[in-house]
Image 1 (cartoon, rainbow, N blue to C red):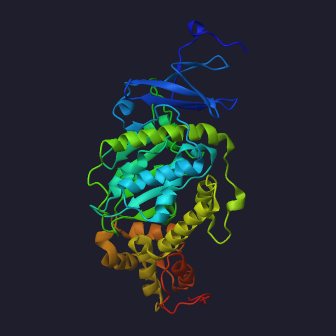
Image 2: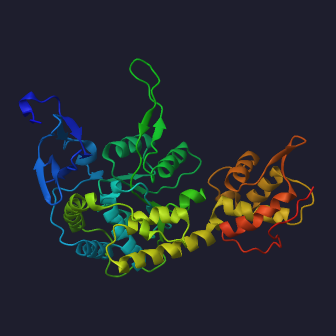
Length: 443
Protein backbone atom coordinates (compact mmCIF):
# COMPACT_ATOMS: atom_id res chain seq x y z
CA UNK A 1 0.00 0.00 0.00
CA UNK A 2 1.37 3.42 -0.96
CA UNK A 3 1.84 5.69 2.03
CA UNK A 4 0.15 9.06 2.03
CA UNK A 5 2.23 12.21 2.24
CA UNK A 6 1.83 14.45 5.28
CA UNK A 7 0.16 17.05 3.05
CA UNK A 8 -2.65 14.55 2.33
CA UNK A 9 -2.83 13.27 5.87
CA UNK A 10 -5.84 13.51 8.14
CA UNK A 11 -5.32 14.85 11.64
CA UNK A 12 -2.52 12.86 13.29
CA UNK A 13 -3.42 10.65 16.26
CA UNK A 14 -1.70 11.67 19.53
CA UNK A 15 0.25 8.55 20.51
CA UNK A 16 2.07 7.30 23.58
CA UNK A 17 2.65 3.68 22.66
CA UNK A 18 1.44 1.37 19.92
CA UNK A 19 2.18 -2.03 18.46
CA UNK A 20 1.44 -2.08 14.72
CA UNK A 21 0.09 -5.09 12.87
CA UNK A 22 3.48 -5.89 11.33
CA UNK A 23 5.12 -5.99 14.78
CA UNK A 24 6.59 -2.49 14.62
CA UNK A 25 6.72 -0.76 18.00
CA UNK A 26 5.96 2.92 18.49
CA UNK A 27 7.05 4.59 21.75
CA UNK A 28 6.89 8.16 23.00
CA UNK A 29 10.23 9.71 24.03
CA UNK A 30 11.01 13.06 25.63
CA UNK A 31 14.20 15.13 25.42
CA UNK A 32 14.17 17.39 28.46
CA UNK A 33 17.09 19.52 27.28
CA UNK A 34 15.57 20.20 23.87
CA UNK A 35 12.04 20.28 25.33
CA UNK A 36 10.48 18.18 22.58
CA UNK A 37 8.86 14.80 22.19
CA UNK A 38 9.27 12.31 19.35
CA UNK A 39 8.12 8.82 18.44
CA UNK A 40 10.67 6.01 18.52
CA UNK A 41 9.64 3.53 15.82
CA UNK A 42 11.19 0.23 14.84
CA UNK A 43 11.75 -3.48 15.34
CA UNK A 44 14.60 -5.10 17.22
CA UNK A 45 17.69 -2.90 17.21
CA UNK A 46 16.61 -0.81 14.22
CA UNK A 47 14.85 2.19 15.81
CA UNK A 48 14.33 5.67 14.32
CA UNK A 49 12.97 8.86 15.91
CA UNK A 50 10.12 10.69 14.11
CA UNK A 51 8.30 13.96 14.63
CA UNK A 52 5.31 12.24 12.97
CA UNK A 53 4.96 8.73 11.63
CA UNK A 54 2.92 7.58 8.63
CA UNK A 55 1.61 4.04 9.08
CA UNK A 56 1.17 1.66 6.16
CA UNK A 57 -2.62 1.73 6.60
CA UNK A 58 -2.75 5.47 5.95
CA UNK A 59 -3.06 6.65 9.54
CA UNK A 60 -0.65 9.20 10.96
CA UNK A 61 0.74 9.17 14.48
CA UNK A 62 2.07 12.16 16.38
CA UNK A 63 3.76 12.27 19.80
CA UNK A 64 2.02 13.75 22.82
CA UNK A 65 3.12 17.36 23.21
CA UNK A 66 6.13 18.23 25.33
CA UNK A 67 3.93 20.88 26.98
CA UNK A 68 1.69 18.19 28.48
CA UNK A 69 1.76 18.83 32.23
CA UNK A 70 2.47 15.21 33.13
CA UNK A 71 5.46 15.12 30.79
CA UNK A 72 6.75 18.65 31.40
CA UNK A 73 6.71 18.29 35.18
CA UNK A 74 8.09 14.73 35.07
CA UNK A 75 5.06 13.20 36.72
CA UNK A 76 5.42 10.60 33.97
CA UNK A 77 9.05 9.67 33.26
CA UNK A 78 10.05 8.77 29.70
CA UNK A 79 13.26 7.75 27.98
CA UNK A 80 14.93 10.28 25.67
CA UNK A 81 16.08 7.82 22.98
CA UNK A 82 17.09 4.15 22.71
CA UNK A 83 20.66 3.44 23.79
CA UNK A 84 22.38 0.04 23.14
CA UNK A 85 22.34 -2.01 26.36
CA UNK A 86 24.85 -4.75 25.56
CA UNK A 87 23.67 -7.92 27.32
CA UNK A 88 20.66 -8.49 29.57
CA UNK A 89 22.95 -9.68 32.37
CA UNK A 90 25.03 -6.53 32.04
CA UNK A 91 21.92 -4.35 32.13
CA UNK A 92 20.66 -6.08 35.28
CA UNK A 93 24.05 -5.61 36.91
CA UNK A 94 23.92 -1.87 36.15
CA UNK A 95 20.43 -1.63 37.65
CA UNK A 96 21.48 -3.47 40.82
CA UNK A 97 24.51 -1.21 41.21
CA UNK A 98 22.35 1.88 40.76
CA UNK A 99 19.78 0.70 43.33
CA UNK A 100 22.45 -0.31 45.85
CA UNK A 101 24.10 3.11 45.58
CA UNK A 102 21.03 4.95 46.85
CA UNK A 103 18.99 2.54 48.97
CA UNK A 104 19.67 -0.37 51.32
CA UNK A 105 17.67 -3.45 50.33
CA UNK A 106 18.12 -7.12 51.07
CA UNK A 107 20.09 -9.02 48.41
CA UNK A 108 17.12 -11.14 47.34
CA UNK A 109 14.73 -8.21 47.00
CA UNK A 110 17.32 -6.07 45.19
CA UNK A 111 17.70 -8.81 42.58
CA UNK A 112 13.93 -9.22 42.33
CA UNK A 113 13.42 -5.44 42.02
CA UNK A 114 16.03 -5.23 39.24
CA UNK A 115 14.25 -7.87 37.19
CA UNK A 116 10.89 -6.31 38.04
CA UNK A 117 12.14 -3.09 36.44
CA UNK A 118 12.91 -5.10 33.29
CA UNK A 119 9.43 -6.63 33.49
CA UNK A 120 7.79 -3.18 33.51
CA UNK A 121 9.34 -2.53 30.06
CA UNK A 122 7.90 -5.71 28.51
CA UNK A 123 4.86 -6.32 30.73
CA UNK A 124 2.45 -6.32 27.78
CA UNK A 125 3.95 -9.64 26.65
CA UNK A 126 2.14 -11.29 29.58
CA UNK A 127 -1.43 -11.72 30.78
CA UNK A 128 -0.75 -11.56 34.54
CA UNK A 129 1.63 -9.47 36.62
CA UNK A 130 2.85 -9.16 40.21
CA UNK A 131 3.14 -5.89 42.10
CA UNK A 132 6.17 -4.61 44.02
CA UNK A 133 5.85 -3.07 47.49
CA UNK A 134 8.02 -1.28 50.05
CA UNK A 135 6.41 -1.44 53.49
CA UNK A 136 7.53 0.29 56.66
CA UNK A 137 6.87 3.07 59.13
CA UNK A 138 7.87 6.73 58.96
CA UNK A 139 11.61 7.15 58.33
CA UNK A 140 12.17 3.56 57.21
CA UNK A 141 13.37 4.54 53.73
CA UNK A 142 10.40 3.24 51.76
CA UNK A 143 9.80 6.50 49.88
CA UNK A 144 13.49 6.73 48.91
CA UNK A 145 13.34 3.16 47.60
CA UNK A 146 10.14 3.99 45.72
CA UNK A 147 11.78 6.96 43.98
CA UNK A 148 14.97 5.08 43.11
CA UNK A 149 13.19 2.01 41.72
CA UNK A 150 10.34 3.98 40.14
CA UNK A 151 12.74 6.23 38.23
CA UNK A 152 13.76 3.25 36.08
CA UNK A 153 10.32 1.80 35.37
CA UNK A 154 8.56 1.98 32.00
CA UNK A 155 6.56 5.23 31.69
CA UNK A 156 6.61 5.58 35.47
CA UNK A 157 3.65 7.62 36.74
CA UNK A 158 4.20 9.05 40.24
CA UNK A 159 1.19 9.56 42.50
CA UNK A 160 0.49 9.58 46.23
CA UNK A 161 -2.27 9.20 48.77
CA UNK A 162 -2.87 12.95 48.46
CA UNK A 163 -3.94 12.50 44.82
CA UNK A 164 -7.56 12.27 43.74
CA UNK A 165 -8.54 9.09 41.95
CA UNK A 166 -9.87 10.49 38.65
CA UNK A 167 -6.49 11.60 37.19
CA UNK A 168 -4.97 8.28 38.21
CA UNK A 169 -7.58 6.41 36.14
CA UNK A 170 -7.08 8.72 33.14
CA UNK A 171 -3.27 8.63 33.29
CA UNK A 172 -3.10 4.85 33.57
CA UNK A 173 -5.52 4.48 30.67
CA UNK A 174 -3.62 6.97 28.48
CA UNK A 175 0.01 6.11 29.18
CA UNK A 176 -0.32 2.38 30.03
CA UNK A 177 2.81 2.62 32.15
CA UNK A 178 3.90 1.81 35.70
CA UNK A 179 1.99 3.27 38.64
CA UNK A 180 4.40 4.43 41.37
CA UNK A 181 2.23 5.08 44.41
CA UNK A 182 3.41 6.49 47.73
CA UNK A 183 1.48 6.31 51.01
CA UNK A 184 -1.13 3.88 49.72
CA UNK A 185 -2.84 3.88 53.14
CA UNK A 186 -6.32 5.36 53.38
CA UNK A 187 -8.72 5.27 56.31
CA UNK A 188 -12.52 5.30 55.98
CA UNK A 189 -12.51 6.87 52.53
CA UNK A 190 -14.02 6.37 49.12
CA UNK A 191 -10.55 6.87 47.65
CA UNK A 192 -9.38 3.66 49.30
CA UNK A 193 -12.19 1.70 47.67
CA UNK A 194 -11.32 3.18 44.27
CA UNK A 195 -7.61 2.48 44.71
CA UNK A 196 -8.35 -1.12 45.65
CA UNK A 197 -10.32 -1.44 42.39
CA UNK A 198 -7.20 -0.43 40.49
CA UNK A 199 -5.09 -3.00 42.32
CA UNK A 200 -7.69 -5.75 42.10
CA UNK A 201 -8.25 -5.29 38.35
CA UNK A 202 -4.78 -4.18 37.37
CA UNK A 203 -2.70 -7.35 37.48
CA UNK A 204 -4.69 -9.36 34.91
CA UNK A 205 -5.14 -8.29 31.31
CA UNK A 206 -8.70 -7.69 30.12
CA UNK A 207 -10.35 -6.41 33.31
CA UNK A 208 -10.88 -2.65 32.92
CA UNK A 209 -12.62 -0.56 35.57
CA UNK A 210 -15.97 0.93 34.52
CA UNK A 211 -16.72 4.48 35.61
CA UNK A 212 -19.80 6.60 35.08
CA UNK A 213 -19.77 9.04 32.16
CA UNK A 214 -22.41 11.15 30.42
CA UNK A 215 -22.19 12.37 26.81
CA UNK A 216 -22.83 15.95 25.71
CA UNK A 217 -26.33 14.80 24.79
CA UNK A 218 -26.84 13.71 28.43
CA UNK A 219 -26.81 10.06 27.48
CA UNK A 220 -25.48 7.59 30.05
CA UNK A 221 -22.35 5.98 28.58
CA UNK A 222 -19.99 4.28 31.08
CA UNK A 223 -16.32 4.37 30.14
CA UNK A 224 -13.89 1.49 30.56
CA UNK A 225 -10.48 2.49 31.92
CA UNK A 226 -7.59 0.11 31.41
CA UNK A 227 -5.64 -0.27 34.66
CA UNK A 228 -3.57 -3.32 33.68
CA UNK A 229 0.12 -2.76 34.25
CA UNK A 230 2.99 -2.91 36.76
CA UNK A 231 2.67 -1.12 40.09
CA UNK A 232 5.24 -0.21 42.73
CA UNK A 233 3.76 0.84 46.06
CA UNK A 234 4.99 2.23 49.37
CA UNK A 235 2.76 1.92 52.43
CA UNK A 236 2.87 1.49 56.19
CA UNK A 237 0.49 -1.41 56.70
CA UNK A 238 -1.03 -4.39 54.93
CA UNK A 239 -4.21 -4.36 52.87
CA UNK A 240 -7.22 -5.89 54.54
CA UNK A 241 -7.97 -8.26 51.66
CA UNK A 242 -5.73 -11.33 51.81
CA UNK A 243 -6.28 -11.99 48.08
CA UNK A 244 -4.98 -8.50 47.27
CA UNK A 245 -2.03 -9.01 49.61
CA UNK A 246 -1.05 -12.11 47.62
CA UNK A 247 -0.43 -9.98 44.50
CA UNK A 248 2.55 -8.19 46.09
CA UNK A 249 6.23 -9.01 46.44
CA UNK A 250 7.10 -7.05 49.58
CA UNK A 251 10.27 -5.74 51.22
CA UNK A 252 9.90 -4.81 54.89
CA UNK A 253 11.84 -1.56 55.30
CA UNK A 254 13.61 -0.18 58.36
CA UNK A 255 14.96 -3.47 59.68
CA UNK A 256 18.59 -2.48 59.12
CA UNK A 257 20.63 0.55 60.11
CA UNK A 258 21.30 2.98 57.28
CA UNK A 259 24.57 2.20 55.54
CA UNK A 260 27.03 5.10 55.98
CA UNK A 261 27.80 5.21 52.24
CA UNK A 262 24.17 5.92 51.26
CA UNK A 263 23.55 9.68 50.78
CA UNK A 264 20.99 11.28 53.08
CA UNK A 265 19.55 13.23 50.12
CA UNK A 266 19.46 12.06 46.53
CA UNK A 267 22.10 13.94 44.49
CA UNK A 268 21.26 15.62 41.19
CA UNK A 269 23.28 13.00 39.31
CA UNK A 270 20.73 10.34 40.32
CA UNK A 271 18.27 11.70 37.76
CA UNK A 272 20.94 11.62 35.05
CA UNK A 273 21.85 8.03 35.93
CA UNK A 274 18.18 7.03 35.86
CA UNK A 275 17.65 8.65 32.45
CA UNK A 276 20.70 6.88 31.00
CA UNK A 277 19.36 3.55 32.24
CA UNK A 278 15.86 4.30 30.93
CA UNK A 279 17.40 4.87 27.50
CA UNK A 280 19.01 1.43 27.63
CA UNK A 281 15.78 -0.09 28.94
CA UNK A 282 13.90 1.39 25.99
CA UNK A 283 16.32 -0.40 23.66
CA UNK A 284 15.72 -3.55 25.73
CA UNK A 285 11.98 -3.21 25.10
CA UNK A 286 12.43 -2.93 21.34
CA UNK A 287 14.84 -5.87 21.25
CA UNK A 288 13.14 -8.27 23.67
CA UNK A 289 9.38 -7.68 23.64
CA UNK A 290 8.71 -9.78 20.50
CA UNK A 291 10.64 -12.72 21.95
CA UNK A 292 8.96 -13.01 25.36
CA UNK A 293 5.98 -14.98 26.66
CA UNK A 294 5.06 -16.83 29.84
CA UNK A 295 7.00 -20.10 30.05
CA UNK A 296 4.84 -22.93 31.39
CA UNK A 297 7.94 -24.96 32.25
CA UNK A 298 8.68 -22.50 35.07
CA UNK A 299 5.49 -23.38 37.00
CA UNK A 300 6.40 -24.82 40.41
CA UNK A 301 3.86 -27.48 41.55
CA UNK A 302 4.83 -26.87 45.18
CA UNK A 303 3.56 -23.28 45.03
CA UNK A 304 -0.03 -22.07 45.00
CA UNK A 305 -1.72 -21.32 41.65
CA UNK A 306 -1.89 -17.59 42.55
CA UNK A 307 1.81 -17.44 43.36
CA UNK A 308 2.73 -19.26 40.15
CA UNK A 309 0.46 -16.92 38.21
CA UNK A 310 2.37 -13.81 39.26
CA UNK A 311 5.82 -15.40 39.53
CA UNK A 312 6.09 -17.06 36.11
CA UNK A 313 6.04 -13.77 34.09
CA UNK A 314 8.90 -12.45 36.21
CA UNK A 315 10.93 -15.66 35.91
CA UNK A 316 10.27 -15.75 32.15
CA UNK A 317 12.50 -12.71 31.58
CA UNK A 318 15.38 -14.07 33.70
CA UNK A 319 18.02 -15.70 31.53
CA UNK A 320 20.13 -17.53 34.13
CA UNK A 321 19.15 -20.15 36.70
CA UNK A 322 21.08 -18.31 39.44
CA UNK A 323 18.82 -15.28 39.05
CA UNK A 324 15.68 -17.43 39.04
CA UNK A 325 16.82 -19.24 42.16
CA UNK A 326 17.48 -15.99 44.05
CA UNK A 327 14.00 -14.73 43.14
CA UNK A 328 12.34 -18.04 44.05
CA UNK A 329 14.02 -18.10 47.46
CA UNK A 330 12.87 -14.55 48.25
CA UNK A 331 9.32 -15.22 47.06
CA UNK A 332 9.05 -18.49 49.01
CA UNK A 333 10.20 -16.72 52.20
CA UNK A 334 7.70 -13.94 51.56
CA UNK A 335 4.89 -16.42 50.94
CA UNK A 336 5.61 -18.17 54.23
CA UNK A 337 5.69 -14.78 55.98
CA UNK A 338 2.35 -13.81 54.43
CA UNK A 339 0.76 -16.94 55.87
CA UNK A 340 2.21 -16.42 59.35
CA UNK A 341 1.97 -12.64 59.72
CA UNK A 342 -1.65 -12.28 58.65
CA UNK A 343 -2.42 -11.39 62.30
CA UNK A 344 -2.44 -7.72 61.37
CA UNK A 345 -5.47 -8.27 59.17
CA UNK A 346 -9.07 -8.22 60.31
CA UNK A 347 -9.67 -11.59 58.68
CA UNK A 348 -6.98 -13.33 60.71
CA UNK A 349 -8.22 -11.78 63.94
CA UNK A 350 -11.75 -12.82 63.01
CA UNK A 351 -10.61 -16.44 62.59
CA UNK A 352 -9.04 -16.35 66.06
CA UNK A 353 -12.17 -14.83 67.62
CA UNK A 354 -14.46 -17.30 65.85
CA UNK A 355 -12.31 -20.22 66.95
CA UNK A 356 -12.42 -19.17 70.60
CA UNK A 357 -16.20 -18.69 70.53
CA UNK A 358 -17.02 -21.92 68.70
CA UNK A 359 -14.66 -24.29 70.51
CA UNK A 360 -16.97 -24.66 73.51
CA UNK A 361 -20.25 -23.52 71.95
CA UNK A 362 -23.29 -25.76 72.34
CA UNK A 363 -25.72 -23.23 70.90
CA UNK A 364 -25.59 -20.74 68.02
CA UNK A 365 -23.29 -17.72 68.45
CA UNK A 366 -24.71 -14.39 67.32
CA UNK A 367 -22.83 -12.27 64.79
CA UNK A 368 -23.21 -9.38 67.23
CA UNK A 369 -21.24 -11.34 69.85
CA UNK A 370 -18.54 -12.14 67.28
CA UNK A 371 -18.36 -8.48 66.22
CA UNK A 372 -18.06 -7.31 69.85
CA UNK A 373 -15.19 -9.74 70.50
CA UNK A 374 -13.46 -8.62 67.31
CA UNK A 375 -13.77 -4.95 68.32
CA UNK A 376 -12.26 -5.75 71.73
CA UNK A 377 -9.29 -7.36 69.97
CA UNK A 378 -8.47 -4.99 67.09
CA UNK A 379 -11.03 -2.18 67.09
CA UNK A 380 -8.51 0.67 66.90
CA UNK A 381 -6.32 -1.09 64.33
CA UNK A 382 -9.07 -1.76 61.81
CA UNK A 383 -9.26 0.23 58.58
CA UNK A 384 -13.04 0.52 58.89
CA UNK A 385 -15.86 0.35 61.43
CA UNK A 386 -16.50 -3.23 62.57
CA UNK A 387 -20.29 -3.31 62.53
CA UNK A 388 -22.20 -6.58 62.87
CA UNK A 389 -23.23 -6.23 59.25
CA UNK A 390 -19.63 -5.92 58.07
CA UNK A 391 -18.49 -8.82 60.26
CA UNK A 392 -21.32 -10.95 58.84
CA UNK A 393 -20.13 -10.04 55.35
CA UNK A 394 -16.55 -11.08 56.21
CA UNK A 395 -17.74 -14.36 57.70
CA UNK A 396 -19.72 -15.27 54.58
CA UNK A 397 -17.56 -13.97 51.76
CA UNK A 398 -14.01 -14.11 53.15
CA UNK A 399 -14.11 -17.11 55.47
CA UNK A 400 -16.89 -19.18 53.93
CA UNK A 401 -18.79 -19.40 57.23
CA UNK A 402 -22.56 -19.87 56.99
CA UNK A 403 -24.51 -17.07 58.69
CA UNK A 404 -28.15 -17.91 59.34
CA UNK A 405 -31.05 -15.71 60.47
CA UNK A 406 -32.75 -17.23 63.53
CA UNK A 407 -35.55 -15.53 65.47
CA UNK A 408 -34.58 -12.18 63.96
CA UNK A 409 -30.88 -12.52 64.81
CA UNK A 410 -28.02 -13.59 62.56
CA UNK A 411 -26.05 -16.47 64.07
CA UNK A 412 -23.31 -19.00 63.36
CA UNK A 413 -24.09 -22.59 64.30
CA UNK A 414 -21.51 -24.67 66.25
CA UNK A 415 -21.36 -27.10 63.31
CA UNK A 416 -19.36 -24.44 61.40
CA UNK A 417 -16.36 -25.29 63.58
CA UNK A 418 -15.60 -28.08 61.10
CA UNK A 419 -14.25 -25.32 58.81
CA UNK A 420 -11.91 -23.93 61.47
CA UNK A 421 -8.91 -26.26 60.90
CA UNK A 422 -8.65 -25.24 57.24
CA UNK A 423 -8.94 -21.55 58.18
CA UNK A 424 -6.17 -21.92 60.78
CA UNK A 425 -3.88 -23.42 58.14
CA UNK A 426 -4.84 -20.76 55.58
CA UNK A 427 -3.97 -17.90 57.95
CA UNK A 428 -0.94 -19.56 59.52
CA UNK A 429 -2.47 -19.77 63.01
CA UNK A 430 -1.37 -22.51 65.38
CA UNK A 431 -4.24 -24.84 66.27
CA UNK A 432 -4.48 -24.60 70.06
CA UNK A 433 -8.26 -24.84 70.16
CA UNK A 434 -8.70 -28.60 70.17
CA UNK A 435 -11.03 -28.37 67.14
CA UNK A 436 -10.33 -31.26 64.79
CA UNK A 437 -11.22 -32.04 61.21
CA UNK A 438 -14.52 -33.75 60.47
CA UNK A 439 -16.16 -32.43 63.60
CA UNK A 440 -19.63 -34.03 63.99
CA UNK A 441 -22.68 -31.95 63.21
CA UNK A 442 -24.37 -30.32 66.18
CA UNK A 443 -28.01 -29.46 66.39
